[in-house]
Length: 130
Image (cartoon, rainbow, N blue to C red; front, side):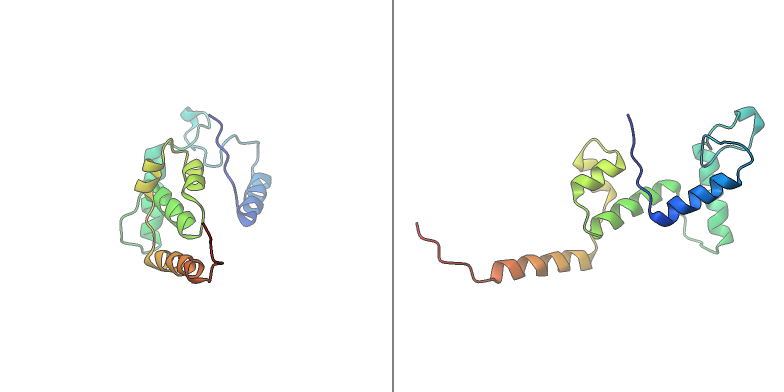
């Protein structure tokens, strides 16, 4: 399966700068430093350990995992106005049900969408004859 990953312009610039700083061409953005791995990407455990270390260095005591970043990504997209179908595709989910498990609507989002819908409902509509 091909997976499309969209990057914000600042991330794209940072990646190009990072690539220019590499001594040789690299296949992965997060390669393993272990020579026996032959430049393979970091494994799930290595990523989790690094995230834990960086959270600790930042003084963040709440426990997070790399997987929690997926939940945050999905929730923020949905609350920013992306449709559930778009979030599903970007997450690589097969079903909307799975995407629903990842997302949470903020109260302010529910209120804003309610207010918007009610403004449409309350607008005078032309008389409809049957």
